[in-house]
Length: 154
Image 1 (cartoon, helix red, strand yellow):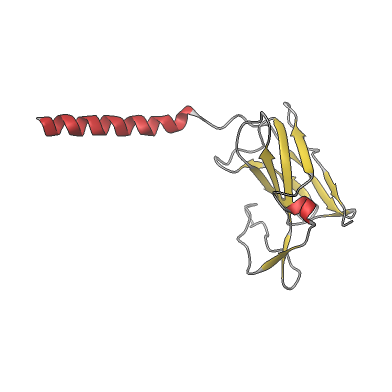
Image 2: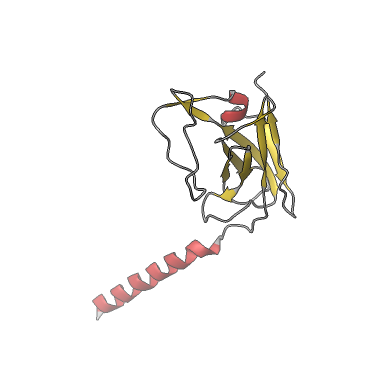
């Protein structure tokens, strides 16, 4: 009988642990997209990462630019389109392989592909390094498709 009570107590505690995961759901998102240029030209196949700062809740939101430099953010966990409204530190990275081709290319379904071998970052650290980036953005409560970045080499 004691074994049954212990087993029941263990089972009950495990059920409680599973439910606690849902106590902190990811915040609601709004549309968040834009265009990235580098020295006036569209920056293709770059990763755009929004890192929440200050009072902004949630996780990193990531997008990959297409040939025209356009990106659309998606929450890293949960795959929700967009980003929660708030303030962000922004990291834009565009690694290139040894032959100068993009190290990341979106797949046919729009998902980011895997890195293709060794790569070298093509952007200055003030854009591409999490610790050194000077880029910031605000996602307004109603969302925006004009969160643009005009990067320059100097």
